[in-house]
Length: 248
Image (cartoon, rainbow, N blue to C red):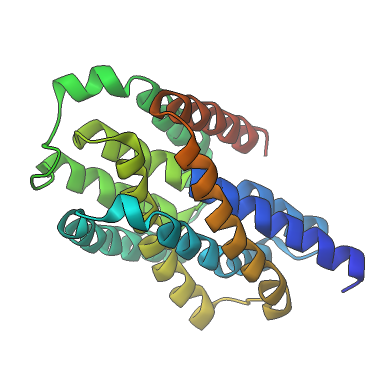
């Protein structure tokens, strides 16, 4: 690996970590970077999943203030996310990926538009700000876990949409729970890929610290944004993710 390759991977890891902390979708930065350096598609996918895990951790650490008072909520939803992630991992290993991958752009686009309509949807569905999550949020988090373990791109947008629809709370606090769930789902994927995947650890060693730093930076950027601006950024990025996936 040349010095240029090292700098390229550091930059990709940093940007991917920031985007994942802000909205989700950093995979669409780091995965193509690995492909550009000549890694085979499957190898790039599992290496990317492992390399970005520290970025999710950085996002959770950066949202410590927003997570205060939400321990019970985050814990019960994390258990649901683990079940979904296990199902998604099994789906990836046992079934053909073509059909599901053809649906991915539509899923991300739907999630982005649903986030745009979140204030209206919140009036028709919904839970309480500090009470236990409604039953429908469990189904949404399970599907988000399944999706995220199978295909990481746009997972954050999907999770934030589900949580925003059914949790009546400040968007920054909801985004903090989203970050915690993304870390849980990513952890399940990393364990599976580390045991059964062809991970290129030299690339992980370069990208992982950069994604951790990006995770911290991303939370700082997100915290400075008003909720309406944050929602607009996430929607715009989510639609961009959907378009990129469709073209890919």
